[in-house]
Picture (cartoon, rainbow, N blue to C red):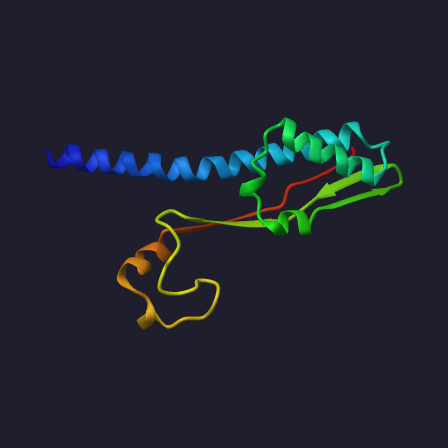
Length: 138
């Protein structure tokens, strides 16, 4: 019985983590595909037209814009040089698998003694992802 519970917990934990991580990677994959298709097919358009078209493609391809942080759009660059179109951005996503900590702000300095026991577990269950989708006209 113990072995069964162990394997169920292990498999259940894997499914839970996968259910949190897969949408993040899938959203980034959609963004990368949009960038590649745009760089290949819209290299004759102006930068403003490409920006407008990318916004439309995000809606068509159902990119989860709510899951993208503000630095995605702040770092978005569309440049055109010598007939080549370059599109890229950089962004960071933090997944709190057990929810964000309540006793401390994880983005500021804090002492270990200020952290409640449950928040220590939450801080350890944090996953950070850095993405940099980029494409240019071949």
